[in-house]
Image (cartoon, rainbow, N blue to C red):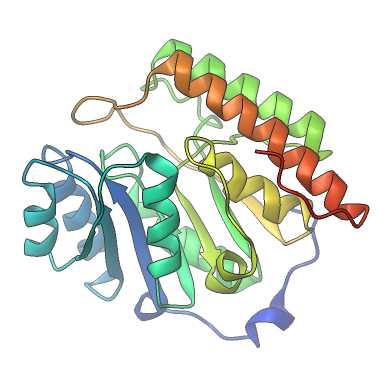
Length: 248
């Protein structure tokens, strides 16, 4: 994956700074963690990055986000993918970083993600499993290893972590692809660029124990993610043959 041709020609050789970065997230009842996450973003980026939250909460999450300077887009709860898709498409800066608001992802590594984009990568994907992800529940960790094996087999590229929520993208990539998945959007956001031969890098990150309660049922959610991996991979294979269809 790291051997893909870098896309400096797509960026015009710009060197992006944090003033060129939007950090986006879908938020739903994360009042226990969102303040800490936004404080970390502000500290790491010196307040330069713009934060966008697409929020369907009925607790103080949107209020806390606004107090920290985030742009909040209110949305009726419709699932993970609907919120994150709205967030990535609402971003108006050339580099877009997705993150979860449960404090599991290391915002202190944002400089590493930005550096990789400046090296020419189109997508920089945080690999939680590289260091073992011991803070992740055992069933989730096993499921994520299984998703990576499935995605690797179908995409023809070695994928380590298919469903991570922390990635950096060139905004042009997000605008050029029609995103269709909901629960499985995290996998789609990696697989479509990878199979279309954008320059993709997986960057090892330290995954932390989440604050607050998880919203995803591991069985139901896992089945939806596996289905998404199958659907997206088959659609992209058909696209390579000149057949542009949506199977979902």
